[in-house]
Length: 247
View 1 (cartoon, rainbow, N blue to C red):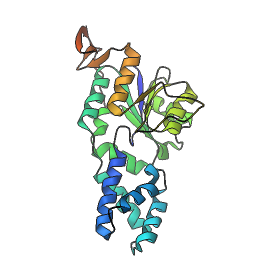
View 2 (tube, helix red, strand yellow; view 1 turned 45 degrees about the vertical axis):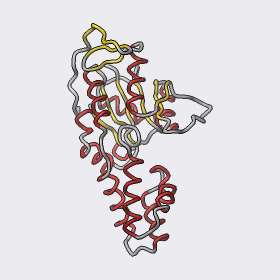
View 3 (cartoon, rainbow, N blue to C red; view 1 turned 180 degrees about the horizontal axis):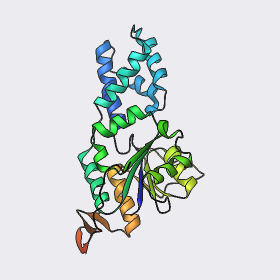
View 4 (cartoon, rainbow, N blue to C red; view 1 turned 30 degrees about the vertical axis):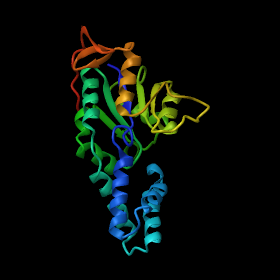
């Protein structure tokens, strides 16, 4: 039963889309031009900018009377409210679980926010467990957080795959441990000369299909059966494994 390590934001869940929706609502609420959405996205830097710095930038630009803490809470709540689990991603994770994979999320971020996304979207029903950096006390790409994920799932890292969109945190972390990986490029070119992902994918569905293909010799599981090309194979899939939190 291979271990499947998965990033959360912009991998399993569309954090960028959720933040854009919040930014559009915010711009409308303060009466700013719609073009300011792009400015807010630049400030956010795909979630890498500290939330407090984003809040201060918004206060300064729009001369807001709201406190920084209120803006931070509004931002976090807005992103959470607009985050959805793609049913096709849920289906792919169910297929992975049925085929014997053990899916575990490994995410940087605050425990409160990331756990809320996992639970409120229903993603928790398709995971064996999850590890969040604030709770773990260590962040990607530090190898320790991946080891914690394996410990939580009662699995070995040997043979595991890592799927994520961050060249450094996800693919760099996997490379440091000698793990196979899939990078979600999201329209970007790979520019890191020191290492490279095993496979590259357009999105989470392509990424999971790439893992299945690599691990099974281009035969990936569908509804408990092996699948190759457009023809169903005669073989029965592995015995279904119970998916749900281990701890």
